[in-house]
Image (cartoon, rainbow, N blue to C red; front, side):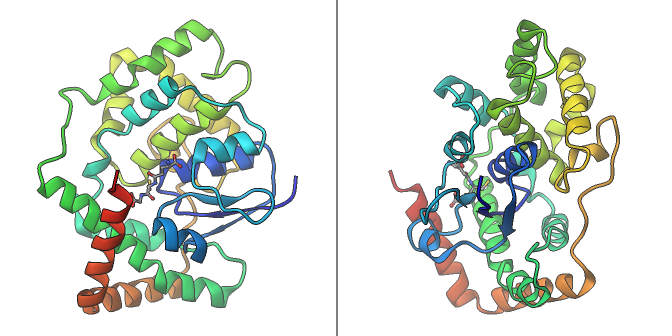
Length: 275
Ligand SMILES: N[C@@H](CCC(=O)N[C@@H](CS)C(=O)NCC(=O)O)C(=O)O
């Protein structure tokens, strides 16, 4: 298969799912932290976007995975995966941790000059997600469950029924990539579901599955869960110091330019939420 171009940040579960699929299938790909103009105009900073074949950018992770050769998922499976994302709104509880984590997850363009430019500009994407999450929380829309472990129980049952190492059978497939993507997101900035996954006595099979996925993806450079689950591994490589400096300069710029940047964030966020 030809090279696949991907836009997104590896904190996003849906970007992670696409990157996991590409890595597993050994498909060459690029990853950029700025949205392509075409998708920015229609969908703002929505990620992932991927160009699999031809010139069309696609925005749905499950469809991108299908187009690169993996199985389709049912609506019910997708609903369960989305249901396992509860707790994501705790990511921005600490502004310092949120921004520092994003400063480390730098642009991966091959050219250093491009990295610098992208790291400056991607501070807008960070501002977008920070403001959207904080607004949703301020509006009282964060409905934490009593036990964060509950959202993973359907997958524990699937593993029990399948009797194999993976949710999809003998080999991982779209469902594994999507759920593992959710877990990478939870681990990229520690949120309460990580503690539930580590300690809930009902989730033994799921912990074994995380171990199996981590073994399979031991050479994958976007693995955040290895810090919290066995077999342990280091977090993904950090952006270099000059890249972090330009990211923080970009952040100062985006905040200083708030009469422009905040209305733009509001416009893009509202437009993406219109029915
Ligand atoms: N349908 C998309 C959902 C992707 C998605 O929700 N991405 C989030 C980041 S994790 C996003 O970019 N949100 C921007 C927005 O809501 O405006 C998929 O599964 O690929």
